Image 1 (cartoon, rainbow, N blue to C red):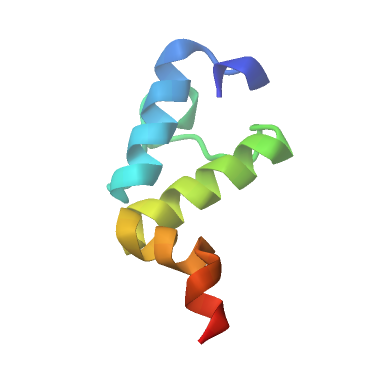
Image 2 (tube, rainbow, N blue to C red):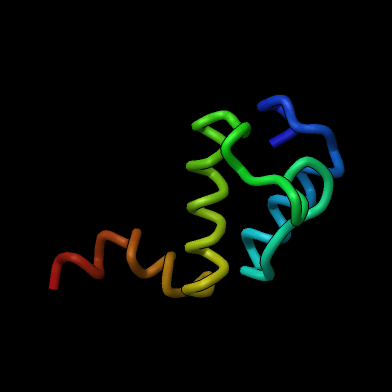
Length: 71
């Protein structure tokens, strides 16, 4: 997230709030701001992290495992 132009506080806050599904982050993605200013690639990363946090790691790994889809 820092590589996409966010400062460290905003990058860590957005990643933690997406992974834990805990609401607003800190920094530029805090309670009075939103995620619209983040680069589109960063929004995709945060969406995947939110999915990972919601479904848990093993569910996501099973979805991406080829053996799961062969049955």
